[in-house]
Structures are given as C-alpha cells and as structure tokens.
Image (cartoon, rainbow, N blue to C red; front, top):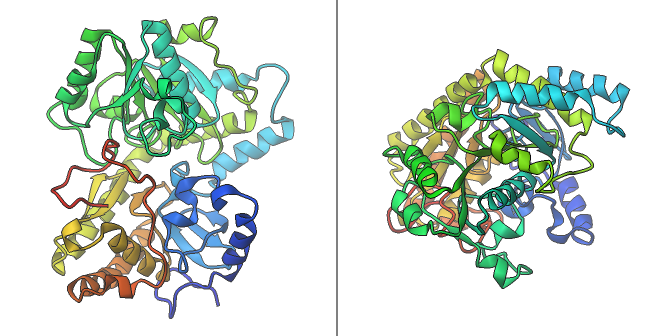
Length: 449
C-alpha cells in the first residue's frame, strides 16, 4: 500500500518514479527542467522523483504516496494546489482562448491590480519566467543610466549577466563575466565599496532568510539615490507573500524597479516587471522587451484571481501565522532534546532549517532529516514555503513528524552514525562555490546548510 501522511511502517515505495527516471536520463540533460525539483535535491533511493497530482497542501507521487508539501512548486503555489477560484478563472478563460492575435483586456486589468497593490508600480510589463524580468530590469537600468556594471546579492536566474558570478558559468564570455559583481547582504560598506561610476544597478532579493539589520534596505536606497544607481528588488519570493505589496510595503523602502513571478498566479507561468514610469517608458522604443506569450490569457486570468484572493483574504497574514507555528515548534523540539546545532530561521512565510557544521556535514544532516520526513509523509527540501492551504492539521502533523525524526538525527550525531543511518545518496549542493550568494543567515565558522 502507498504511504500516507503520518506513521508508516517503511519508507515510500518509488518503483514507478525510478522507472520514469531511467527513461528521462536517456532524453533530458540532468533529467529535470528545474534544478531545485531534480533528484539531486532529495535523498536518492528514498525520495520519489515524480509527482502525479496535488490538492491544497498535499501531493501524490506516481506510486500513490501522499505528502504534505513544503516546496509548493518551488514557490509559485501561494494559495495551494488546484485552488478553486483560480482554476475556475483558468477554465472560464480557456473557453474563450489562450493566446490571441491582438492584445487582451486582462493585460490592462492585471496591470491595474498590480499598480493598486505594489508601491511604485507605475507601469507593468509581463513575461514568462523570473529570469526574463530580472534580465529586462538590468537592461533597463543600463539604458537609463548609460552605465554597464551590476552589483547583485542573492539568486536571480540563469541568464548571462547573473550566472557569470557562479561556478556554472561555462559559455559566458569573459567580457560579460567582468560586468557583474556581488555584495554582502546587511553590509552596506560592501555596497559602497562596490559602486563606481560605471555601476548601472544594484539588484537583490530584499530578504531571503536573514532579515535586514540596522536599516540596511533604507541605507541601500540612500546609496543608490546618491550615486545615481537604479535599485532593483527581485521579489520572486517576497512579492505578495510578505505583504500584498511585497517587501516594499513590508519594510517601507521603495525600489526603482521590481520583479515578481512565483506567488502571483498560483502556479501558472507569468512574470512581472514593474517600476517607475520614467524608467519603464524606455520599453516603448529604446529597450526591446517583447515576447509572444507575454499576454497569454490563461496565466493572466490566474494572476487576476490570485491577486484578488491574496488581497481580499489577507493571505500574507495566514502565511505568517502558520509559518510561525512551524518555526517556533521546530526550535522548541530541537531545544528540548538538546540539538543546539540546528534551528529554524527566516521570515515566517518562508523559513529555513539549518544545521551547524560542528555537528557534522550539514548536507548529510539535512539529508537524514529529509529521509525520515519522507517516511512520515512530509515533502521537505530544507525550508517551509507556506501556502494558504496549509491547515492547522497540516502544521500539527508536521510537528509530530519532527518530534519523531529529530531524535533519530540527534542519536546518529551523538553516535557518529549519520552516514550509516542514510539509506540513500545525500542531497547535492546546487552550486559548488556559494560564498558570494548570501542567501542564508550569517553563521560562525563551520557553516550551515
């Protein structure tokens, strides 16, 4: 019988997942379209590899195993799987058509909703992926300032200007690599030191897991204003989650340009570039950023329904409330059993579990906990990406799973048996060089993962 959420006699059977994976390996480089969804991010031999369906906060894999999902499509499912009002909007639009030969009214209607919700969103342009709109923002900043260099902090997608700073930069010309630099989050001096007369923009995720300290975002705004640098907020994760108006509303700091995607349409593919009219109007003639599917109507219908639901039902408050229960609950359990080397941190709508390197290899510790959570019906990649569909019962079941799994990890640490306790291959790092990414809280020597 397939496993359910709760206590199961054994780890999930994944025969169908494994069979599909063997077929994929012959056809698809890396076997996946999205690195964070691929087999390297889960304990191979234990975790399923393919999901068949989802409803609310739960998913079922191709072998019929059921899980509470804390990945939520790696972010887009802000409301939950198969959310009724969004699915109705998609179905209603489907009857009229998907992509048209001229513009569609939804392009205007959704732009008006975004302008109402997001501070500083005077004009709006659509695309399909987050890296599309972050790259368009960088191009706009270069056109507006007449400068070339980019300062970045966090993760911004696969396009040349950003991925050049990682160790996966093969195929990017040296001249392009030399135009992008990184700075340290919560370190305004690293920004001041990095800005020069050829700096076009500073782009960052306004918060990932470590909150801004000592008015960092406000100081960043001041530096950019003083130096004539365009400030870009990459709000893929924070937009419509921290608040309906994203990080700008939550922290009270306004960017010049801002980008959105993950939460805005509950899983449908759409991305948004927004910002001040003075810069955005460059898209009319000077900067070319047009796409065939930018006005695709199913995604716009989903975005309209999702944004409306987020605003009318105060979804961000619910995400914070449920996420806070998980963060505080995890930390209480870890403290009770003496696991001082692990904690749950971050903004409550999206929290991260970390392990101190002093207790062993952080990736192996994460992998062992993940392994035991899979046995108990929890799909977990190290963080809690909250959705509006995560119920009190889901949170209670997850904390029960932690109460069972964390002592097993702690025993393995104390007995030096973490490697032996792993039933499969541990999780891989996404990048081999991650020192400049600044997506996790600062930690003592030894590191966390």
